[in-house]
Amino acid sequence: EEQMLLKVSMIEQTEIYEKEKNENAEEEKTGAGTVKAAEIEESLEKEKSDEKESFKAAAARSKSYKKLDVKCVLQNPELPTGCEITALTIVLNYLGYDVDKLTLADNFLDKGRVGETSPYKAFVGNPRDEDACGAFAPVIVNSAKRYLYSENSDMNVYNVTGADYSELVDYVDNGHPVLVWETMWMAKPHIAAEWNVDGETIVWKSHEHAMVLIGYTADTYIMACLLYTSPS
View 1 (tube, rainbow, N blue to C red):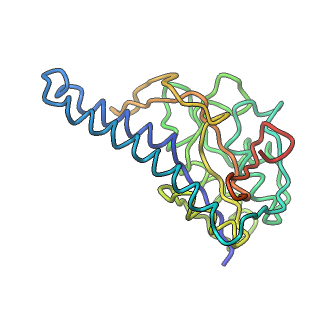
View 2: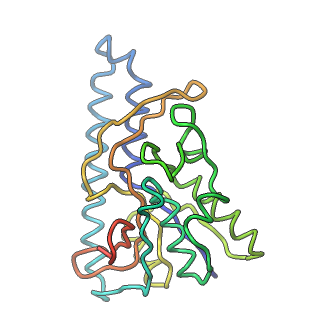
View 3: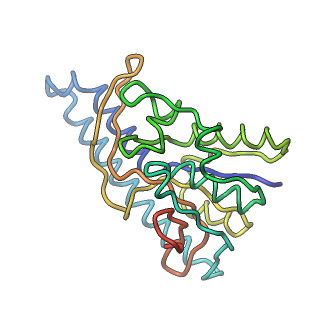
């Protein structure tokens, strides 16, 4: 079955962490929430540690090397903040669809104003602008579905957020590149901006970056990164 896969990992985990911390702010003021906040932070660190272990375990499979023949598309200079829609372009091109990143960005990507939009509902800003933020998996899933519908395609799009890399490489083994959210240079994210949408505090993290998982070796994962001319 033909399919498209998208996954959020570290960026979404830190968003959830910040949301839970905000929800327990009043408890922490009285000291009652201190233990719970510490438990949340400890849990987040454990998830990161578990993910690192899954990297090692998945790479130590019977096949020590796999790389899909994926052509990388660079987001710059036209889309300085458009890594997500560019990553979708890479996946669609690999699957045989002749579409460019600007067509997808201009015609198939929901957008909203910075400071007024949830990245789970629409792209925050415009990917053509340097001061825009970005979007998460549900938004790109919608873009993919809208494009595929316009092409009368019966291909399915799956949001596999929550899957670890040991699962994602199974998709790669079966010939499916996976769009993933990590950070630029795998740098540790920090809070870059906060705003409120319908009573919900949106916390945007720095260095957010979408890439495409296209392969692995015995000890690394191979990504089409959008910022470089060859997979990294």
